[in-house]
Structure formats: C-alpha cells, structure tokens
Amino acid sequence: MSHEESRTIHEFIEYPDHAKRTESSEFRANKRRLVQQLDIGCWICGSKDAREVHHIHEWSLWDALDPEKVLNSLHAFDPYGYTHTAGDKAIESPDDIRNLVVLCEAHHRGVDMGAHDLTMPVWFPQRAVKDGVSITKAIEHVTGKDAELRKETK
Image (cartoon, rainbow, N blue to C red; front, top):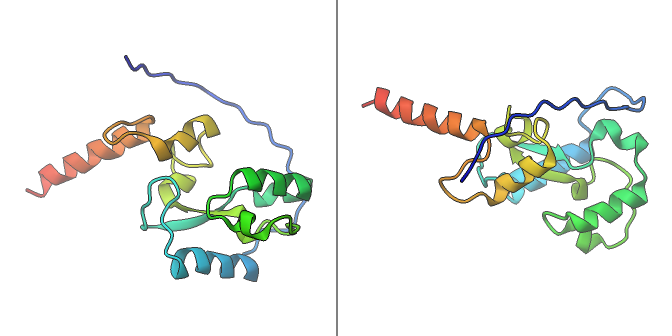
C-alpha cells in the first residue's frame, strides 16, 4: 500500500567565490551537439520539448571540486558514454560534455520534479517509474490539469 510523506529540507551550501555565470563557447557547442545534432531527449522522461542542459557537477561549485574525484564520479554516472570514451583524460571545465545531461524544463528546474528541487533519492527514480504511477505531487497535478483541459476543449 502506498503512502504519502511530506518533508521539509533545509540545505546549507558553501559556494566558493566564482565569476558571474556566463554561457561559455564550450557549453554552447556541447549543448548544440546534445540537443540539436544528436537530438537527445530528457534523460528522465525522454521528452524533446523545452530541453535544457544541466551540469551534473554544479557550475557554481566547480572551484570547490577535485577534478580527479569529478572524473571518478563521471565514470560511475556516464549517461551518454563520453566519459568511457575519453578514459582518464582530465576534466578541466564544468562545461565539458561529460559533465552535462539533457533534461526537459520540468525535470531540470520544475517544482517537485526538477533536479534543482528534489533530493537525488526522489529525482533519480523518476526515470524508472512504472507507467501510470507517480512518485511526486507534480506528476499528479500535471496529469489532473491535462484531464481538466481535455474536458474543457470538448
């Protein structure tokens, strides 16, 4: 039997000093490759609507990260095989294609759905949820709104 649980999480993050975020030419080229050339859908749901590119290791935390540890973790989580192909080639930038994953807007920044809003134990399993099952309120809300809109257009 399923049950609902509500949690309030307070996150305290120590961001290292960093330059103002800009979209680098490396990021633009890798985003173009993933979204336009390879036409990769959202890593969670496969949607090709409102695609965005997410840094697996956050851009704003990059200066606090050990590049060797980043590379080790990207060998474990290598959604498109780029890390496997590059082997132990050093990773020098958060905009390296090995550190990027395509997400739809909802699974990137969406409330109760996005990588920036959920903890990993809830966000990650959204990729594997059974058809017709929801594990977040956002899914139920969107499904309900879709049904409501379909009734209004008939």
